[in-house]
Image (cartoon, rainbow, N blue to C red; front, top):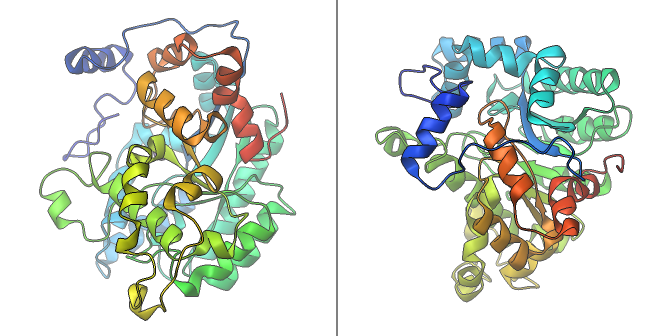
Length: 376
Ligand code: MN
């Protein structure tokens, strides 16, 4: 799907259109057939959804003009795209038909960016509860097809801790999702650490999904606030922040999942170790935090606390590099429905030159482990 400046929905569903785009860029896959008898399941791990009350809360707040938040603006743009909303809001026949078309056995449902963290302060936790109830109902209706991550509003720390506990306990959801920064704040700030503690205590992996960056004008002026720069940059800051704040030393069992092939970070692990001294042991960061000296090189956290998914990057050499450098157990398949959907991309995974064991790990087994899903 193209997010065009005029908010149009070009490319949202047209395979022919998308094939034309890919032919022009040369790198991406030629048309291919999905293997309908593949010896593995396909679990897509970054699949988006939303619901009407959240869209209304977002658009009402945006229309009030009382806040300047590019992420909220993005929600307003999505709200004005009826074909996209129809797919995001369906958790039954339409979604299942698309999954069947693409050969997807199970979707992991993530409340789409920007989620509940951009609504009026005080409304987010109630909307997170509603989201998690709706997602859990969908999982109960279609237990072989859907699993879901819990939404929470990090601005309400106590409410988030309670909701993560309820979602992982009573609702039996499979982890939690945060759409990166919230009005320029990040979970590496000490005030939010009770949320990290709750995630670790409930064995809930945290998926940090992108949203539009907080200081967006220089991105917006160039058309880059989304996948071309703003999205990956913001998740990069969030991930680095968690590493250098010492969060993974304090909560060593905390599991972090990053989409879009780790937002590009895995190719830089070498340099992160080399330049670690820039921020390691430095006093006064994050508004005056005492110096934090990490217990490990940065690479350690990428190989022990972080998993990545392939959403939007069906690119064999890059996926193989990440499997080699982070471990074949740390890379999970994702599609990014409905924003980027393509049977040709599914066919690329089917043809990928990997051992049968690594293919099964990529397509379903790693997801079953990280998100505590039922085993195939
Ligand atoms: Mn996504």
